[in-house]
Image 1 (cartoon, rainbow, N blue to C red):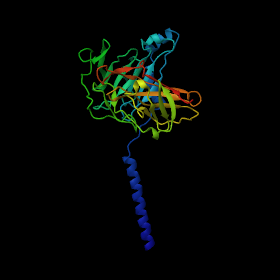
Image 2 (tube, rainbow, N blue to C red):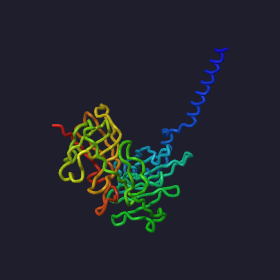
Image 3 (cartoon, rainbow, N blue to C red):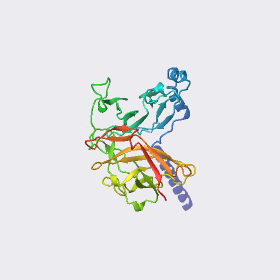
Image 4 (tube, rainbow, N blue to C red):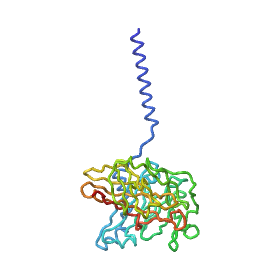
Length: 341
């Protein structure tokens, strides 16, 4: 009798455990599903048209569609960023030498191109009031238009006139209504798992964050020269911080100020690694700026030097605001030369 009672008790406990496991599986959040090669091919096919191929082929080249898959609004559905170009036939795609397309899935197997006009890259600026970021269309020059997601699609929100960024409302057809996200808006996503959170710039362009200063004794990295300053590169922590700022910036940047914060990487990986994360620029009396950069680090041929590149913020001359982004400014390419004797 006792054995039968024990067996019944064990069976009941086992059933409860199985039900709990099933319940956890049902309630568990769905993970993001990567696009299949067939889905990516179908998306790229919408750009690979006879009209798009005509100019490259007439110039003895062929259409090229390098792409990047990225979930820009955090809904676990990937978008595709495509740089439409042709080697040897850059004139086919305007001064930028390429067209930039952002392919957004309609959820039914179709794709919508949010842009599809000359541009060299996209800079994403998180919003406090929407999952869809504002997007700056980068290209030659120092002033770039900003597009905003509104009523189910992207439309021009801010445009350039005489080198200055102004609201497009009243100046461009079908412009998104003007509006300003103030610096006091709710904090948006943190720039990294360990770095400070970022808020929009006072005029809604770019991101500002608290200057991050860390204890240099917590870093275990390699000294590099960066524009005359000595920085410590700690790949295991994903941090680059100032050890000895040069005299010209010593009044703005102190020892321990974090220049870069990103995903950790191995400093001795024989296969090389991609470095990506958030870099900062600094202005006396102002918060730091945030912008995405990436580069390649290889122990055999790039340990002596490596670079990180991205569209760097351009500061207002009169306040702390960001007026645009540039691929040609001094902060767009960060170079690091090993400082060992």
